[in-house]
Length: 218
Image (tube, rainbow, N blue to C red; front, side, top):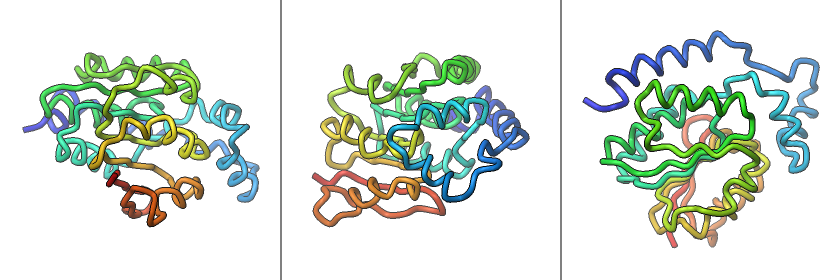
C-alpha cells in the first residue's frame, strides 16, 4: 500500500482528473498553429499567455503522474523542485513519493493566484500540505533564491520557453544522479538541445509522447 493508491489521496486524484477531463481544454481557439507555437516559445510573452490559460487545468497525464511518483520513490528523493503548479495534480504525486520516502521538501511555484489557492486546498485535502512549499509569482524570481543545497528531482511543467532559464537557476543544486522531467519539452527546443548535447553533463531521452527524462551525470 502506498500514499498514492490509498485514501485520502487516491480518490482525490480520481476526482481531480475527472474534473480536468471535463473542463475546457484549449485557450487557442482562433489562433493559427504558427501563432500558437510562437506564443509557446516566446520568452517575453509567457505571463500574458499563461494569464489566458489561468482557468485551464493543464495537468500531467495520469501516466506521467505515476511516472513522477515512481522516479521520486526509486531515487529516494528528499528534495524536489517543481516549475508550474497549476491546480496541483503533479504536486500531489511528487509529495506522495516524499511521504513514502519518509519525508522531505517539495518547492513548487505558480504565478496565477487562483491556481495557487486551489493547489493549496488540494494539498490539504490529500494530507500532504506539510511537505510542500508553494511559492506564488514569476518562477524567475521565486526560484532565484532560498533553494536547497541539493535537489534530487526537478519537474519542468510551466512556461515551456523558460525551461533553459529555470535549469540555470537550479543546476548548481543538482547532484550526479539527480533527475529532471520536462513535460511538453518539444515546445522548448533550446532546452532539448542543451540536455541532449554529448558534453552537456546530462543523459537525456524522450519518454512516451511528450516527456523528456534527463539525469545529471557530472
